[in-house]
Image (cartoon, rainbow, N blue to C red; front, side, top):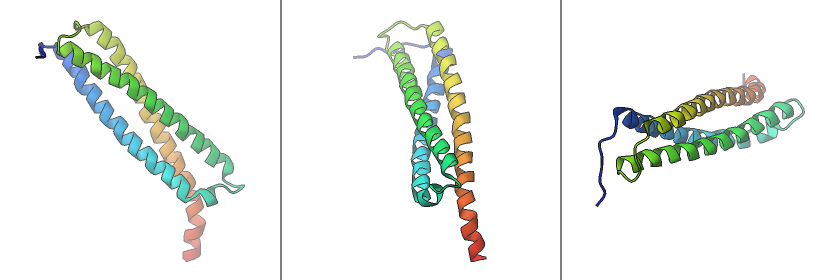
Length: 139
């Protein structure tokens, strides 16, 4: 039978925040799939001479973003597992160790969120630029 110990409020707070960040990463993963589908849907129009450079840049940034998300997810999962082991009294609680990891994770999540927003905006601007001529034809 596992033993659950009383954790410090700070460790519990780290756990709650980390779970929230993991939820955010799940959302980014779903959104990234959507962005890839958007690129696929407009591939023909984006692959022309006028847009190919921006298309390539956005695609490359999306790939980097996806890699960063996976690496951040791994670190976050390790942090959560460590807190869970501390709660089960399998390993001793180390608030200082958790704090250092939490600061690093906060930095990674903040940067990932900012980069994700920039890439999404750039991709939407790019897709909109190839949609406008079609809309003008319909008017």
